Each structure stands twice: as structure tokens, then as C-alpha cells.
Image (tube, rainbow, N blue to C red):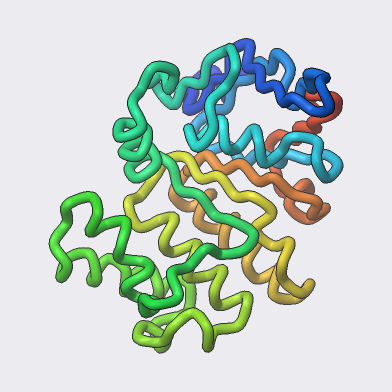
Length: 232
């Protein structure tokens, strides 16, 4: 551990983490006894071939999926044993998730999509929309508040998804190939936006990515291969 990291607290800890799948009667170790610690404010690039387990690992970290054995700690909270309702609250309050395919709700406007997690947290509609509007201004979509996802470009939809992931001010942000569905120029803009937010607000951000540019700016680079996690 570096002197710098020793002064910062651990935001995420993985202990002996395992996830297996059954295929044609055989057990496949998609995540095999992974141990790692990530610190507040770190930007981590998670790389590996398609099907190597990057998305599975992010799903385990967020509590969307359950490990077969091992532990995931977010701060001082152990996810194992929490109810689905408790895990939902963890994701809503402490973890922001950005997907490759945006996952916006087509029947809600831009500002409604962004405000929804805040409203689900019990914040009144007016305050939620105020916060959503501020975030949409920050991602340069202040003029599209009342538009619907189907009229937005891919880059604009990803900006909405970023604002939505940040609405409840999570310390941990998980991004699963956030630029994989975008053209090169738009991908660079989205990457610059995400990196800027992470640095400015000292968020722990984990990118599952193939992007060499993310790797260049990451504090730590990890590769998943045969279920194992290797530090680069």
C-alpha cells in the first residue's frame, strides 16, 4: 500500500470472492477467489476479453448478483446477508451504475428519468427536479429537460444516464463499457465528463472497458483472466 493510499479510507473491499456457472454439466469459475481493495477517489480500469467476467464482477459489487462465496464490503457495509430491499437502498444511496445501453425509461422525459431515483428515495418532486436540472446543466443537457429518450442521440442518452447515476451523490460509481456504444468522438466527450466528475468529487469509479484512453487515466488497472484478477 502506498503512503498516499494509507491516508485514504478503503471504499470497496473484495474478499475471497467467487461466482460459478454451470455449463454442460461443468462448473465454470467466472470469478475465482478475487481479493482486492479500492480507495476513496480512485479511478480503476477493469479490462479483459468479452465474457471474462467484467460485468459479473460489477454486478457482484453492486449487489445485483450474489456471490457463491466470499464477501463484498462497501465502506463498512457487508453485502452478504442483506435483504433485497436493503441492497436496493445501497444501490440507490451509495452506488451509481452506468450501463452501456443507457437503460432510460422511454415514457419519462429527460428530467423525469434523472429525478426518479431521488424521488424513490423520498425526496419531494420539486427538490428532485431541481437537483436533476442542475446535473443536466452540468452534462450540457439543460436545454433538453422535457425531451424524451427516443429523440436523443446516443451520446445525449449516455449523458442523461450519467446524471441519473449521480443524482443521489454516490461515493462509488460503476461504469460498464460506458462508451462502448458510442462513436469515437462522442466516447471521448463522455470519458472526459466522467473523469472530470470522479476527480472533482473524489468518487471511486470503476470502469469495465476496452478503451485505452480510460486505461491511460486510471489510477489502477486490473485484468480479469480465467476468473482471476491481476493488477497491472
